[in-house]
Length: 150
Image (cartoon, rainbow, N blue to C red; front, side):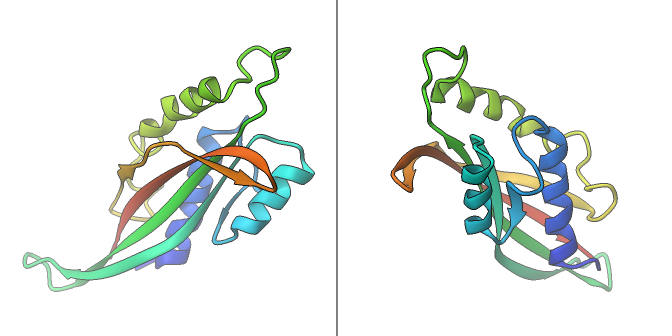
């Protein structure tokens, strides 16, 4: 069993690999939403993602003698709204569609996170929700990931 922390780190790495132009190690983190927003503002960027522990369940497979865990990771992808008419594709809807276009593929190519887990799945992808951070508009896209650990 590798444990929750290792799986969460692998999820962060996966998002960094799939969104190299949008995310960085400072703007994609486990458990530190404030640091992600500090980085978005200090780096003057438009994207960030963070991941939180969403619980875990121990399950026993009758075909095996060993129990395994299912970890739930709750994430949010944040997209800053600027709507600069001078920059093509800078509107929030275009940014949202570009990010969501890749979302289903994040775990499809390798459903084991490089062998860290027997299976990782995107189990829920929420609607984009308007929000404000420091009076600046954002879209937040919540999502839920489940990872099996044995």
